[in-house]
Length: 192
Image (cartoon, rainbow, N blue to C red):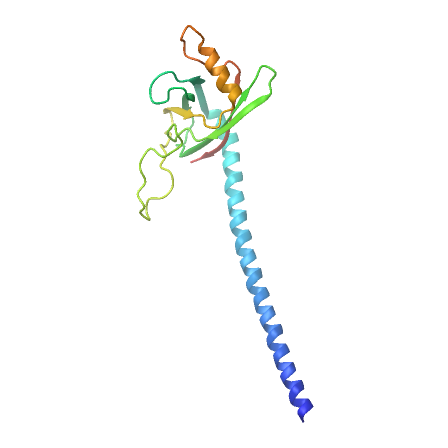
């Protein structure tokens, strides 16, 4: 009888352990599926923004695109990229992401910067954010169809080679120092 009691206890404990492992495995699997679902949703949104950028880029024009070393004002001795972006399309744009490549005379990429032209020049939001639950994210100016938005982006972590060329470009004449190399831009994502 003692052997049967021990066998019964071992069988019950083993059954509980196996059931516990199965429950934990199912909970882990469901958590994994939830995580994968969020990851797939996120990658789908990113892919959709890239497709929107490729399709809608022909309706977006960027003009007056220059990089200069500011000689006056609060941005004195800072490299600043500026220009204007025009929405010639049929939809209002809520967000744009642009990548700019600085190239030298040999067509080598010296520096890349990715930015949102709808943000202020320092990259910080234009409005001070208050810690309220209904105010979240960075406020951006929507670019309405047919509208033009001037943008200015202060370049941070800019390589010394570009900074020195910008400083030399001003020369003794005191003109506005400009980047003499080539600037290539690409619209990475567009959100409506």
